Amino acid sequence: MKKIITLYIFTFSFFLQAQSFRDLDKSPLDMVNFPASSQVQEKVVRILYSRPQLKSRDLKTLIPNGKLWRTGANESTEITFFKDVTIDSKILPKGRYTLYTIPSETKWTVIINKKVNTWGTYAYDSSQDLLRINVPIEYSDEKLEAFSITISGKSSSADIHMGWDTLRVKLPMEF
Image 1 (cartoon, rainbow, N blue to C red):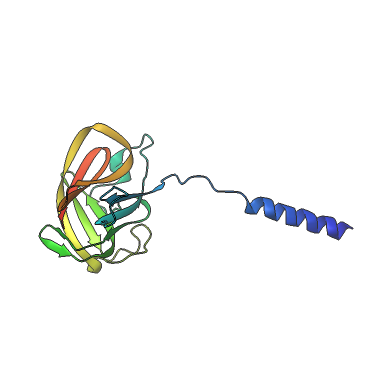
Image 2: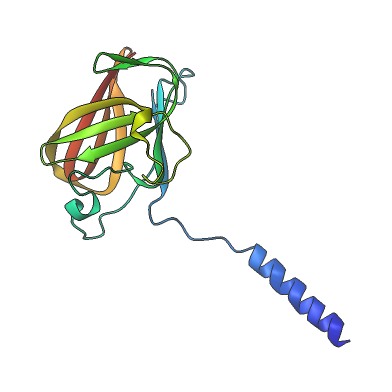
């Protein structure tokens, strides 16, 4: 009888644990597409990234100048081009890549790298860089609590906007 009760308790506790769900990530995963409309079948670009929060911390301690940043949190930010695009007069073939940045006082170096399925910057390999471009920093009156990416544009060109706190950078592309 003791064995049956022990087996019952073990089995019941196993099922209770199997039905629990974890909390939301502190830096939730987000996705941005261009064109954003769900009615447009042919996408040009999709970016998957995690959104770290300021939480009263200083932006310069979260993304220090001169240090490679995964451009988000958790896994490296992933960018997929569904057609060839041109950035800084360089043609990038359609495909899946990672997006890194190196912040500085006046500009960010934006890096598109061929190595995918990486976490953070640990597996970054500069020999796999497809593109490096410096883009100027701008500032806004609007403060963003969470790191954010959006894309704006028209039929043949678009800008990838990245912002956090009052800092903004823009990466133009054509297709």
